[in-house]
Length: 46
Image 1 (cartoon, one colour):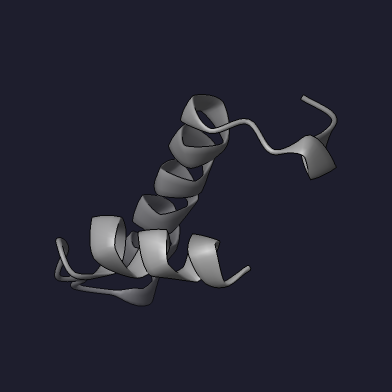
Image 2: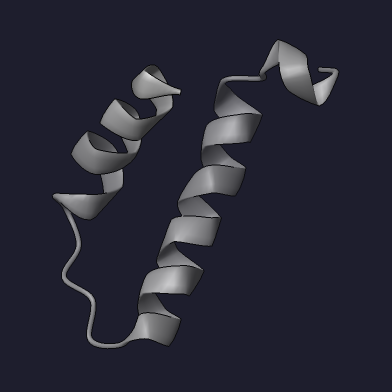
């Protein structure tokens, strides 16, 4: 979990400025999908 939080912070949150909550949710969701595609996690069964 700590590794994920670090990547999220470094690769997404420090890179973007969010104009709204909806924009933040969309960008973070897209980042999570990309992260799970590039770095498959054993807990996801991949």
